[in-house]
Length: 308
Image (cartoon, rainbow, N blue to C red; front, top):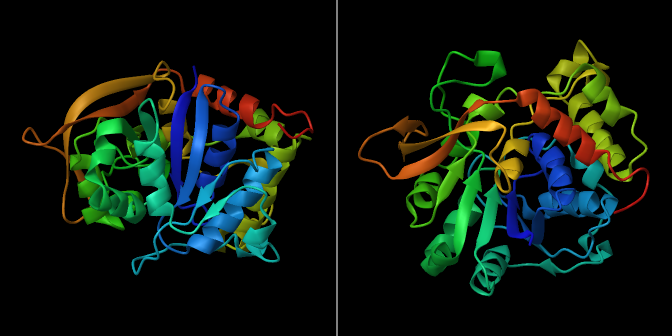
């Protein structure tokens, strides 16, 4: 039986959320019940999510608008992809109170929900504070933290990872809640990048979902500083696809080295291994990164030009 999932995303900031949502829709192991937005700008993010869901033939899924937020809401380089689209066009349900939708989905599920969260966590924090009982019928899987290594471009430095440092209090609330927590820190997710034939398989795919991902990626890249010196880079390689690893961890761990570690979120946004902290399940190294990349490509391009 497929695993019931609530997917919480800050799609519209870094482009990896778009790839992760596409991957999620193509994982038969997962049964998505609700998509919610996080990190503020809820309507902008929902418009992007709805269009990706439509491209993947999943316009049946409800989309909940997360909280407005006064913190760092990140980039908005995908704005052109959202322009001209109205949420009223979406065939599925648009839920204004995404926090309550998350609570109702979790509490109403006959089996525990897997919450996959791939951004800063103000919406998740709001849900836990409004109804702490959700932790009794859910587990949390997140793309959060940096334990022993940083990402591909700064590998040797442990950093205050963006999804944590942009709202440390929310991360503390989520990590310390009485539910099982699994994280994909930069140690593993920070080196996932498609290049060569793997990336070309997505670029050249006639799959409608893959085309939507690439259209968003091209827009995102061309509105960034890197495009000034290399406007064609998006055709040759992906950005770092951090968030896709959290989706994988929702249904499998075989390609990763997992450790149960006591992890504390500090007030300045670091994730420190601390013997006095709650134990979290952490993906700290790859057993077979290449096999994961192959899986990611195969699934995102598997529609063969058809919705589904």
